[in-house]
Amino acid sequence: MPRPLWTGAISFGLVTIPVKVVSATQDHSIHFRQVHLEDLGRVRTRKVCELDGEALSQDEIGKGYELSKEQTVPITDEELDRIPLPTAKAIEIVAFVDADSVDPIRISDSYYLAIDGKVAEKPYTLLRRALERSDKVAVAKFAWHNRERLGLLRVREGAIVLHSMRWPDEIRSPESLAPREVELDDDEIERAVQLTDSMALDSIAGFRDTYRDALEELLTAKSEGKELPEPAEGEEQEEGKVVDLMAALNASVEAAKESRGEDGGGEATVHEMRPRKKTASTKTASSGKPAAGRKTAASRKATGQKAGAKKTTAAKKTTGAKRTARKRSAS
Image 1 (tube, rainbow, N blue to C red):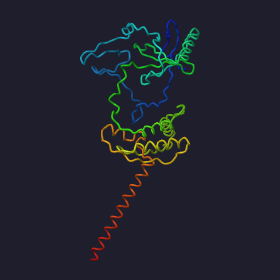
Image 2 (spheres, rainbow, N blue to C red):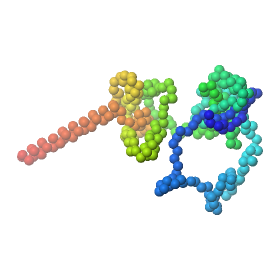
Image 3 (tube, rainbow, N blue to C red):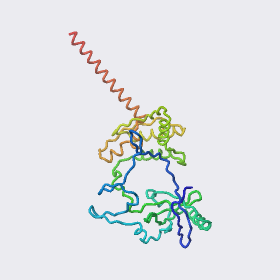
Image 4 (cartoon, rainbow, N blue to C red):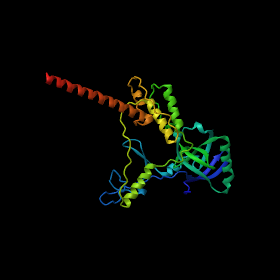
């Protein structure tokens, strides 16, 4: 386990549980440095005062709040520490709620709570058992870096997890984002539900960061002077193309079944598109989002048939024109 980020106690009514907070996640992203392309020397960021142009060290830099373009109020760490903060060294549980009542968008970083000393073993186990038996999660207040935060306590594999949460006023409203008037048939909705069933998994533990794998392969090849790996070929997408939503759903369901080794059950059926008003919301709904703009097998087949019909018509017109020209020349 990494070193503790914070030490304090869980306040559970009159029960106090000494705990240490350790990070529950770790970053596996590949990070790059800024370098000078000519000699690969490191490029560092200098903190420069915009008034005198001098580079500053960290001990010369403090905090300030800008009231206006002309006025800035300085504030020191000592002044911030003197502000009364009851949760400065405590994770104070203020309520218990159903887990389903918490919107996932409010959950931020995650931390494990480890016991801090043998005295914490019994109350820690008591809180864990209470959460497990009640099927509840605990809402708590705590303070880090001179700021009070909202948290969520739950149990994961025998350990209590602290999720940092955003305050209600920090969540933007999505009211103006979603389309309001879109025509959908019950058959389309039912087929979409079938697609969700065919793509259902019991666990997401098997997912991997394929971009990171490809990036590691690229870096290894460059460091060893080997030939760079060929980029994967992706399917071309036609922007703004209106597709048959039901055909796209049918093909998506069949593709999902095939990926699981199930019987496909026949080709997808192409349905005739109903005339609709070309409003912004209708365009959004008919843009083929479930199929991500890809050509389905059925749509490719229909496109091929249309193209073949056009070629036949053009050939007939050419043959007719030649016959007419011959008759004129003969006369």
